[in-house]
Length: 293
Image 1 (cartoon, helix red, strand yellow):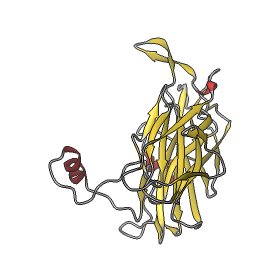
Image 2 (cartoon, rainbow, N blue to C red; image 1 turned 120 degrees about the horizontal axis):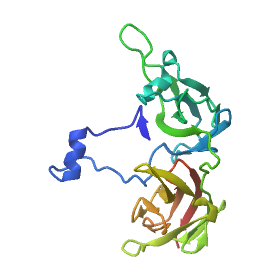
Image 3 (cartoon, helix red, strand yellow; image 1 turned 30 degrees about the vertical axis):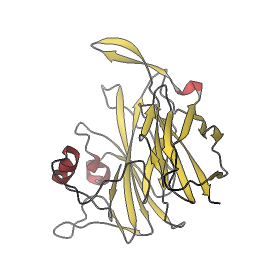
C-alpha cells in the first residue's frame, strides 16, 4: 500500500541513510503500526482464488482517525495482468486488460476466462480512495490525461490486491478471527474501559488473537518439479492510533503482542488484520478507553 496526494515522502538516499545510521535524520519515520492519518489497512476478496465466471466481491479496511466522519470517495479497477505485470495497465483503457470499475465502498468483478494454454491468471485490483476531497485526472504534456487520478483537496491512499483465477478442486479461503483479547478481556463492538497510567508507570499489556481452526489450511506446492504439501503460516498485523507495539506483526503459532498504552487518559482505536500468506485476509477493529482518576 502506498499513500499519494498530500503525503510527505523521504527520498531513497535519505531513507537509506536513516536505516544505515550514516547520517542524522531530520524526520523520524513513524512505525507502520501507528495510525496517525488516513490509511488503507487491508483489502479483502471473498474469494482469494476464483474459478472463471465466478463473481468476486472486494472490500477494504479504511482508517481515518481524525477525519470526524468525512466523506470518502472510492475508485476501484480490476484488470488481468499481462506478462509485464504492469499496474499502470489497470488505468489504461487502451491496454485492454480492464475487466471492472467501481465507485462504491464494495466492488465486484467476474473472474475472466483463462488465456489459452494457461492454467491460471492473475487479476490485479487497485483501490484509490480520497477522504475529504475529490478525484482529479492528471494531465501530461499536450493536455492528455495520464496516470492514476489524484486526490485533490483531501487525503488520498491507494492499495492493491491480487486474486488468482484457476480451475481447482481445492482453493484457498479467507482465514477468520475467532477472538481478540487485551489482557484476557475480549475486544468486541463495545469500547473496553481500562485505567489510564501515569508517566513512568505504563506497563505493557498483552494482545492475543485467535484464528478459527479451519483458518490454517494445507496446500500443494510444486518444488523442484515435485508436489510438496505445505501448511499456511497465518499472521496478524497490529494497528492503533496511540501507544506502542513490541512488533508490528505476530505470526504462525504465536498470535500475541505486547502493547504499551500512552500516558494519561485517551481513546485508542485498534485494527487487527489477519493474513494467511496466500491472499486470504480478515480483520477486526476495537476501541479502548483509558480512564483517568
